Image (cartoon, rainbow, N blue to C red; front, top):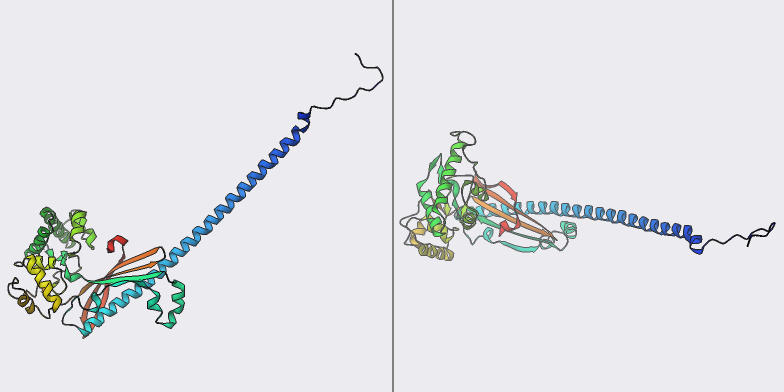
Length: 343
């Protein structure tokens, strides 16, 4: 039917779905934009929080490290004082019944500082979770690797001592031969007898002996019985050496005799070398003063400080000498070591 002329036509309403489509799209876009904004703000806030946490952790760790370094420096000075006092009161002999030989078991640092009222602020600052431990070891209670070679020449008596020790520990003799040869090469290089690069560097620490042919397994077995001192011709202290070291040091002494010698000195330490042969018949004659002694000049000082989750460990070589009727102690070297190295 056609529309009536002159009568306006009624407009048709748009479909329901099309009427709300633009508004619905706008609402969805607004929600999506709001979610993206919230996500962006949350990400930025999380990143800022993480950066702040990281900075706080780094600052806390650095502060604990610096505090530990200062405390361990004080512990080292205290150890040197103990060694000087020991030399003043008992200069004739060094033995394992002296105060320096007693290890310091882990104890709260506050117990040391609380005695001084001036350090009360340090006690509060370090808190109750700081623990200190340490030990002084006589390094002349061990065989000195530096004694093996003197001016490029192998010392036959010292070589015999190390041969007995290697046999006792069931270690390969070939490693000892390689060690001695490499030490001689390093000694020749240090005196300018060989071209650069033709000889190994001379090690400064026991751990570096792997450069000269010792396997890690052999070094681990030898570590309690050997040392590497900066001086040659050092003597073994019969008052502090273990039964294994005494067995290796004396040519005619067996392991049973070395254990009897240790048991005898535990009852009464040796004041002179003449008392050693009297205590054990396996020692033929009086021990040579060129190889043995009852005093010590080189000590190792170990210290550990644990503050919360931070552990700082240090090892130092201390030399003690008598200078003009007084005792002098000086630090030869000082280093940080991994935790397992102090076991």
